[in-house]
Length: 375
Image (cartoon, rainbow, N blue to C red; front, side):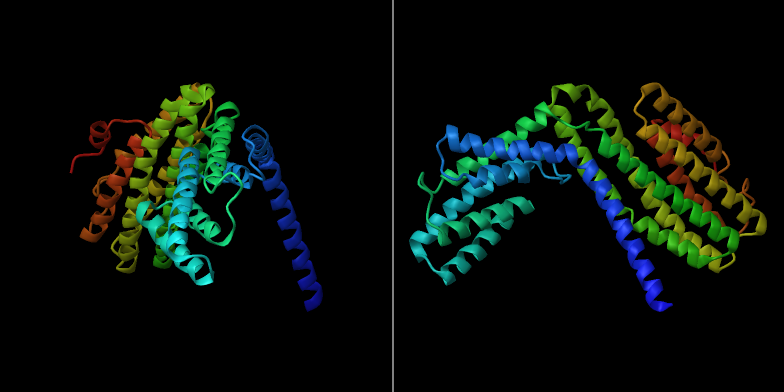
């Protein structure tokens, strides 16, 4: 039975990997075609137009500049070009002083890496500067001189920018996916808190806290997406009209980030309240209901921020704003039948989170605060 079970699990694993790989390959088809055309075009231009012999750096720099990274392409192009140029200069200088050899290559590489980290934090910049310095020491210079590689890198970067301008992807696609993931996680944090309350399970509330902490990588990823998308919207004439929408998404992200931070504070306090039995049965039921309703309103907010059609997006945001406003009107310890001080603290910590969510829907900060009942 054990070998059969292991074989079955192996088949399931392979089927899952195959399905995931096919989906990933299908979604990457257009970018892959762009990268292929760009790399071959940059190589051909450097070889046949500029007369460079074997201009591999034209192809490689264009691939690095396009890539599948979330980092803005303009930054990657600059990192490749500058890293290549400075690396060649550093390598030539140290080669003149130290001569060629293995230990000299080690010294050049160490110095180049430290210099790159001193000049800039970019990983691509560090890699290019160190690689070029090493190649200058270990390999003979190309026929056109050592800076031929630098020119090839610039050519590859320019081709990458040309592809970005002429054949861009919709810059809103990635941020919309990211905001849906982010809001889904926030809604699930609140649902876990509600279930922890209903079951008097402080461990589950702690798990909600951990889940909220793990959302920071999603926030950082969305910020990277928005930077890259903003660059595409600036460079590509076809998508310049979407810059305002991207700005609104970036503004909403700031409020969602604050809501996530407040959810972590809330979950931590809720864990303590459950451990100390600080909430009566009525208060527990009321707060759990508030948390479930807030999670549902967050789902509506997610639909609004990820929607492509303006009219539908405004309708979802209006619904989310109204739902959150109705919930906010109940956020008073007495209205939720909370009696003990520690229970009141739980309610008080949820109020800033509600303000953040209302602001994420587009409501003004002072208006969002005024929705809350006076204390």
